[in-house]
Image 1 (cartoon, rainbow, N blue to C red):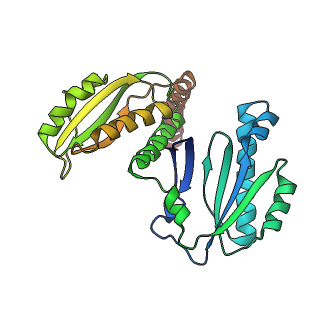
Image 2: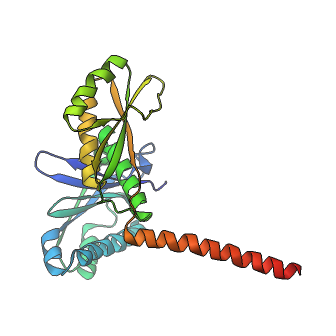
Image 3: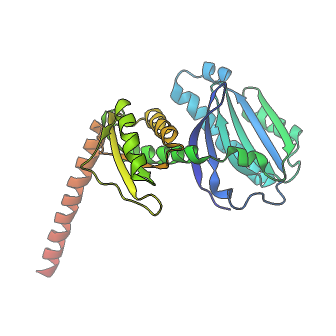
Length: 279
């Protein structure tokens, strides 16, 4: 069993869902004897009303998620496969070995550890059909990559809200398909980057690089990728990723300055130390 978590957004006819799933079980599911699907649903309205800030709201939910996972793992060796977050609710999903722990035990734990009402549901799912439902499709796999990319940018101090040239790489099977789609892309506000070369791949020998000037917030990038993925469907083309130059926030610039100068300072100290020891 391995942890490999992916985050993506899924649109249904009535709502938008944010899904976090451990895709590490993709090739090994179903796992015996984990035959039952257990879900615990939290109504977000009272939680939001109880907390003064969004930070406190998120922190309380994160604490519940962590404590619940630890308890179910220690008492029943339950496998946490992920969560689905909608506007009004948060759903946690586990696979358990049959009906252990039983529903009264779960309700008792929630009564002791959670100040709001929660719904608990269990059903037999020996083939892990619900897990398959949660797994991302081809477009959602791109959203998983987007989230990982943007998390890395934030971690490095990028101000993701600052507009910059965002480049997208497309690949085509035929040159005629590439030429035909260029005019459509221009009409949608993209710039054709003739001077930038993409990397052809086997079966897709005709690359195309395009760009737009905009921010790299997750919602922005996901919407752009959704648009391009839809446009390329049936055209013999394939979306191959995006990238941009980093735009450091003030805090990010300060941290980079400190790291660079600290490294120089440490190097100088080492040289002085070695010189003194050699004299």
